[in-house]
Amino acid sequence: MTFSLADLEARVAERAEAPPEQSWTARLLAGGPPRAAKKFGEEAVELVIALAEGERPPIVAEAADVLYHLLVALRSRGVGLDDVMLELERRTAQSGLAEKASRNHG
Image (cartoon, one colour):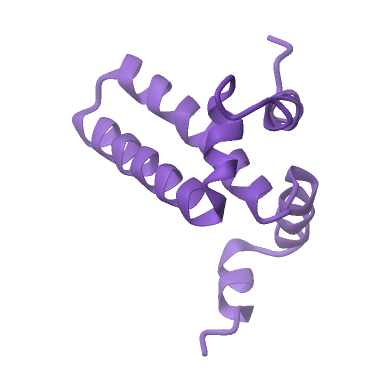
């Protein structure tokens, strides 16, 4: 398998430039960050339900939807996959428990 999240992010960027009547990605982005966030939330709930039910094909399909809609929602706010990966890299420099304890809970 050679397709990566970076490939998906590039595809989202490409489709974002299309007219909204020709691209679901462009249509979501034209609706602004709230629309993209709402759609991501809907897909996340569908994944949670699939995980609870335990059937593999729906889990895989819904996880793919979540990843796609996450990248669209991030793009709607100007956040790139590299930004998220840097944060994950920063967090992996310490144990998960230490990292969680260091967060501001205010």
